[in-house]
Image 1 (cartoon, rainbow, N blue to C red):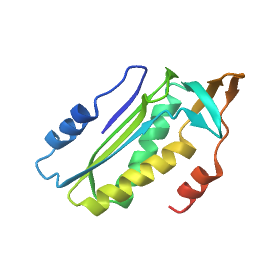
Image 2: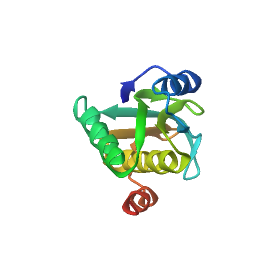
Image 3: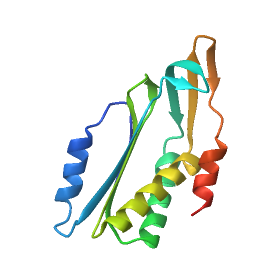
Length: 148
């Protein structure tokens, strides 16, 4: 398991290769890469500023991954989340799950991402032409995590 909260960018190819190399029994790797959008509710986003609570954030991610591992047969997991100021098109999050079979990897990856959006202590401020404002939790994210 790899959890990283970082300001620097990451390489999807490199992180995926590390998962491939982690276990000879890997039969499937499912990845999700989240990017900063340039539009949010019709407003032009200049940047997102991400903050977190060190220690608490990592602990929350460990619990989310442990729950995924309890539900599905998972061989390895990588979660990378960036903090600091990010601009449109930049990578913000990476979730990857390695398992024996694709179904387990798809489900676990989607579960981790849904729970990360609703249970991990990250806070986002949106900077646009009107200044900065906190990004509110979305009902669609709550609905997605509630199905699990």
